Length: 394
Image (tube, rainbow, N blue to C red):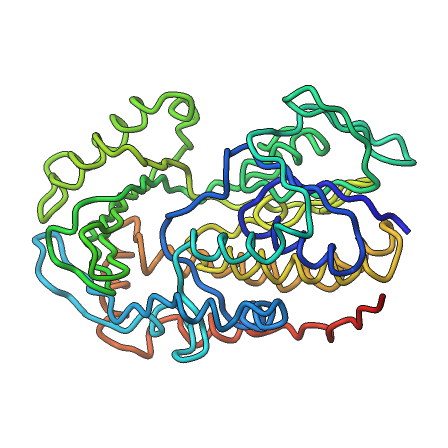
């Protein structure tokens, strides 16, 4: 049975895979281009089977201790007047008291802590070449190191380097959903606490999100655009100018947010998109998490799917050689992943309506709780039963 595994990526799917594969007797190496596990970041959610995965990892209590517990989301009109105020579960389909919301950095820290003594972590490095010669995969790292592994798993995100090296250019799998966004931290000058405030006009949304009572909060500026602005990815100044150009003349706190965005030292700019692939594996290489099936934040399910997918992939590898294991992983997971991806259009309508007609429909739904997509989302989130835990011996 294949036993040495290289995992590219140390965010959520990567460390979760490292934990389960190490538990099943694999020798695991994780390579991460960042110099350390990344802290901070916006809040994410663990819902449905993902909560059970955390329990099986022994992390559920620690995750609940870090629960953010967002109390409300306030929706504003173009002039800043309140349209509606709802509990997050009414929008996301979450289950109060069961689901967990925590800062992305808190989750990655918990996952890393659970496996750092069991797997080798190579920070500040990345894969430059992969040669799958049938009996193994020869890997060359950016540092110059060369090693051979039985299997390679790409858990390196939406813009996966592993996927490009093995499956070809990203554009054939990248499905742009028509939005761009900029995320950054900002002074909490409104005194927000455990809440989000979101301002929307057709095609543009500005959101402030405070996870606690601290002096900092998260700012988000998103806008609809027909084509993806690929020219801006290599130029931070172009990113800032592009975002600012879409919010010229807007009201409420938008001018202040734009200025904060321009000077933020932690700006994260990207397009809102999904990865959809006909297969997730090729030879001895397989993809997991966003690298395989990115859902976009419009579905609210990326972190949950990363945890669930990692559990399922490791579960199959523990019992079969890689060709059979990869096929079983695909059969067990694909429908669930696709259905969660399909939640994105409803999320887009609620969070970032493009047109005046969509905005009016969204506002009408906010006034009528039965018009919100929560029930449908909740059914999709939970529509998978995890296989039982494997008994580990020796």
